[in-house]
Structures are given as C-alpha cells and as structure tokens.
Image (tube, rainbow, N blue to C red; front, side):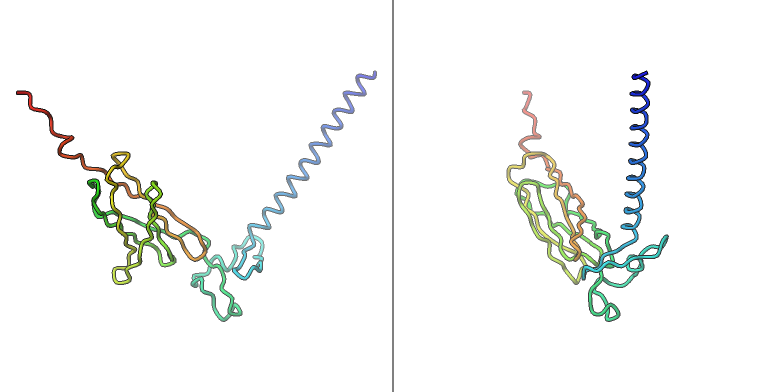
Length: 183
C-alpha cells in the first residue's frame, strides 16, 4: 500500500511540475511578443506599436537624422546594416604589387575599412566625384598562401556593420614555373 502512495505522490509532483513549466513558458512568450512590437529611439524612449502592426518608425522612409516633428531628437529609422560591394583593380597579383580596392556602399555608410588578416587595417577614403570608397593595398613580399583574402567592412551611423571579401590570387613567379632543361 505504501508503494502505491509513493507512486501517486510522484505522479502528482510530476503533473504539478508540468503545469508550472507550461505557465512559465506562456509568460515568457507573452513577454517576447511585447518586446517585438516596441522600438527604441536614439533618445532612449520606447514607443509601443499597436497589436499586429509594425512600428511606424521602422516603416518610415525618412533619413536617420530626425525631424522637427520629433522635438529635434534624432530617431533610429533603420535597424539594418549597410550594404557594400567591393572589387580589386586586379584579381591576379605579384608580391610587392599595389592593388586599388574600390567599394560602393549604400547612402548610410559612414566608414569603410580593409583588413588583410595579418594585422594590417586600412581605412578607405570616400571619393565624392566617383561615389565610391577607395584604398590601396600592397601585397606582402612573402605571402603565406597563394590566395590573399581581404575583408572590406562598411559601418553606418548606428554602428551596424556589413563585411564582404575580396580575394587576390598570386601569380606564380617565372622562376617557379620554368621547368629544368632535360638536355
């Protein structure tokens, strides 16, 4: 009889645990749903949107600089990272050669940096006449591999980033490709 009572108590405790866990998951789901319908402005205030609607600030096509309608405070309009395309002046390079890297980004890009994975970081400069970001990279004299990967990272005013890669293939040197005479 005692073992039946112990089994019943364990079953009751398990049922209570399942009910409490279900309630906890329900409360967490309600809390997460509320956070998805709120946006934070740069001034730090929170604006709630109606149920089932996207926040108005997220759908606005206005620039992120803000307007006088907002009381002079700048609102974070875009929560997406910038977009960027990058190219090299040459895909095949030789050690010591200088390669020009150009990047074209969306209008919200405020900074573009190039990194080569060897500790070298080069800021690209915006050329307003061409509407592109430009920089120069010198291929190392003794590269570690036959292919060099350069990361080009664009950053916007909200400090959101987007990275793309440019790869440079090393030309084989004439001394390495020449085969010895068989005569």
